[in-house]
Amino acid sequence: MNTCQYLEKEHGFEVTYLPVDGEGLIRPQDLAASLRPDTILVSLMFANNEIGTVEPIEELGALCREKGVLFHTDAVQAAGKVPFDVKSWPVDMLSISGHKLCAPKGMGALYIRRGTRLHPLLQGGSHEKNRRAGTENVAGAVALGTACELAGKETKAEEARVRALRDRLEKGLLDRIPFVRINGSVSRRLSNTLNLSFECVEGESLVLALDQAGFTLHRADLPGIAASTGSACASGILEPSHVLAAIGVPPQLVHGSVRFSLGHFNTEADVDVALDVVPAVVERLRTLSPLWEDKLASSPPLPQAS
Amino acid sequence: MNTCQYLEKEHGFEVTYLPVDGEGLIRPQDLAASLRPDTILVSLMFANNEIGTVEPIEELGALCREKGVLFHTDAVQAAGKVPFDVKSWPVDMLSISGHKLCAPKGMGALYIRRGTRLHPLLQGGSHEKNRRAGTENVAGAVALGTACELAGKETKAEEARVRALRDRLEKGLLDRIPFVRINGSVSRRLSNTLNLSFECVEGESLVLALDQAGFTLHRADLPGIAASTGSACASGILEPSHVLAAIGVPPQLVHGSVRFSLGHFNTEADVDVALDVVPAVVERLRTLSPLWEDKLASSPPLPQAS
Image (cartoon, rainbow over all chains, first blue to last red; front, side, top):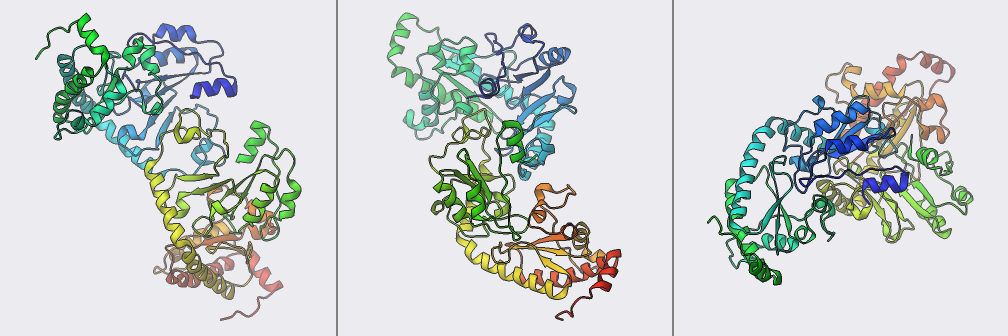
C-alpha cells in the first residue's frame, strides 16, 4: 500500500492522480483542472526515479500557490543532480534523501516553509518541534548537512560532467544496438539517467547478465555492470513498472527495460566498459530468445554505425 | 502529547494508567485488576529512566499471557544494564535504543515475537516487512547489532562493576551530605542509577553548578560533573518530574532531585572526583539558600561519618 492508497483507505481522503504525457511530464493544464475548492495538498515528484523526467516544478508550484493550495515536491531523485534554490521557489515542502547525495542511508530531510503547519508524523516526544518523536540520528543529520553543502557547491559542474558521460553512453548504445528506445523525456531529463527498452530482451535477465558480464560472455576480464529494472522501492516485486506503463510504453517493451544511472564516482573509462559489454550481453541474450529470430525475419535492423 | 494521550485523543482508545508504589514498582495485583475483556495491549517500562526501578517484567508479562493480552515492554533503559533473554520471557514486543548501548543515536529496535501482527508505523513502501516505510539506516542497524552482541557478552560483568561504583558513590554522598534521600527502589534498581533528593537545593541549579564545578567552587583544577534532572525526553520543560511525583516524593524535594548515571566509561577515579566535588557544591548552594538557615535551626543534621 503506498501513501496515497493509505490516505484514501484509512483516512478517507480523496486523492486525484494526474496523468503524464509520453515523456512523463505533467501538463500544467491537467493540474489546474484537477484543483478543487477542498484540495489541501498537491504532491508531485520533482524528477522521476525511473526515467529521470524533470517536472516543471516552478510552474506547477506557482499554479498551486495561486489557488492557495499547499505544494510538496519529492526532490529525492533530483537533489544533487539538478541545481535549485528551494527558497526562491513556490514550494511549501520539499523532501530529500541522504543516500542519493552520497550521505549515509536512513537519513532524509523535509524542507518546510516557515508558517506551514504539519500534523506530527510520529507521536511520543517533543523532538524536532513535535513533528517526529524519537532520539535523532545526529551523525546522519550532520552527514546530510555536509552532503547538501557539497552539493550546493558542486552540482552545477557535476551535472555537466555526468551529462556528457550519459550522452556518450546513450549515443554509443543506440549506435551499437538495434531495436532500442529511450524512455522518458530527452529534453527534460536528469543528467545521470538513461532508461532503455530493448526489444526481445527480458530486463531482469539483462540486469543479472550485466552484473555477471564476465560469466555471461565467457570473458573473465570483464567487470560487472550494475543496472536496474523498476525502482528500489519496489524491488523484489515482479510487476511491470507503473512509470513506464504511464508513459505508454507497450507491455512487451516494459519487460525489456533497464535503467543505467551514472553518478559522482563514474568516469569515461566506465562508459568505455559499458559500451564494450552491454551490446555484447544484449546480443547474447537475444540469440537465446525465441522471439529474436522472428523479429529479425520480419524487420531486419538498419545498418549500424560501426 | 505522549503516545497514550495521542491514542486516546486521536484514535479513541481507552488507556488505563497503573499506579506505582513508593519505590516505583507496579503491583501485579493492580495489573491483574486492570485487564478488561477488551484490553488489547499492555505496555510497561522494564526499568524506569529517572529512578532506575526495575519492574518484575516476567511476572507482569506472564499475567498478560494468561489473559491472552499482548505485552510490550520498553527496555530502552534496561538493555545493556540488566542481562536478559527476551525469547525466554513472556514478552511479545520489546523496544531498545542504540544510544543507550553506546551505538549511535537515532537507531532503535523493536523485538516482535513471531506471529505478532502489527499495523505499519510508517506507510509508503514495503521496507521492514511493510512495518516501517523508508530507506533503512544500514550503518546504524549494523552498529546496533554489534552493540547488542557486545552487551550480550559483557552486561553481566559490567553490571557488577558499575554497581560497585554506584554503591560507593551513593554511600559516600549519603555519608558526606546531610538531608539527602534516595529515590526509587533500593533492592530492584538498575546498577548505574542514583537519584537523590537534596533538601534546600534547586535541582536545575545543582546540575549547572556541577557542570561548572571549577567555577562554582573557585577551583580551576576541578572537572565538570554531568548530572541531570528529569529525563532527556522532557528536557527544556521546567515541569517537576512526573516519575518522582508518582512515587510520592514531596514537591519541594522533587525540585531538589538530581540523577547521577554511571556507565561503561566511568572509573573509580570518577567516583573519587564526585565524592570530592558534589558535597562541596551542595554545601555552596545551600549557603546561598534562604531556606537552609531555617532548616539548620529547626533540625540540625546528625554528626557526619567523616
